[in-house]
Length: 371
Image (tube, rainbow, N blue to C red; front, top):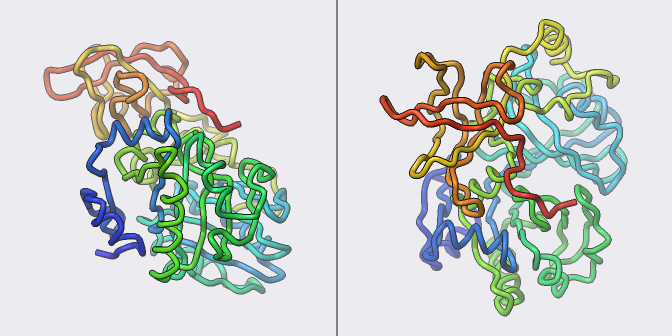
């Protein structure tokens, strides 16, 4: 398994390490997932090692045209210093990955992809680059990434940089020195809470120093390291999709609720749009929805069947857990379109013979702080 530059920091802190996307990553630290979750939602915040993510760079005269043809959102709307959530659909309209596109400067972009799909994504990026006048590079191994999320993130991080963090709007970024290191400081994250993501060189001396400086600055406020377990419960409370669970190469962005990042009228258009138009015209048969249950002891999990009154499967749970903030089970899953409206009652089979009632509820399950 691969290791991020922060691997030894996690081990020294007593983290439980697991395999994730080919990397050995911390799933939780000694205080546990619930404590970590609440540190981000209610406390000063937390620090996530997300260095497993991939970073591709496209630059040159055709970089914009190229990204327009392979991503679903409209890259032409970006201004330098702005980021955009998007997805990577194939010719049949299903999803290779979801991603974020950053416009660094005119004709120069950084594309951040999921770590578990990085190799597949890179192969697709290279295949589709033929005929475009641009330079395409993969700097994933050279780039480390920390996310600092929570209400105290701005004040803690501001002590380590002269960049005015308050001036960075949501889904925007600035380049500057942080802890004396040149890096991209991005107002993005995966938790619904205020926060930033820091893209930095991946050498151990740099990453170790930055990690230590952040925790020195955050210790008085109670800043905590956060593992994959709390990262998952935090994003689930917001209803954010996780590739490999809620979206994959069998799902399309329209049924996954990602129509808002699928700009079918942009020019030049994405190579997936003919297929997606046909899907839209035919009509969706299923939709990804959120739902919750008040039944005690019920935990809806990935892969659980959604069933009708006769026990026949009509859908599937894609993500599910107990919400630490609501203290009840919440989930995402695909249901027939007719059952996708808020307030609709559905049934989830937790195991053979154990079926619970749940109610469709549009996420977020917990009110977000990010504006």
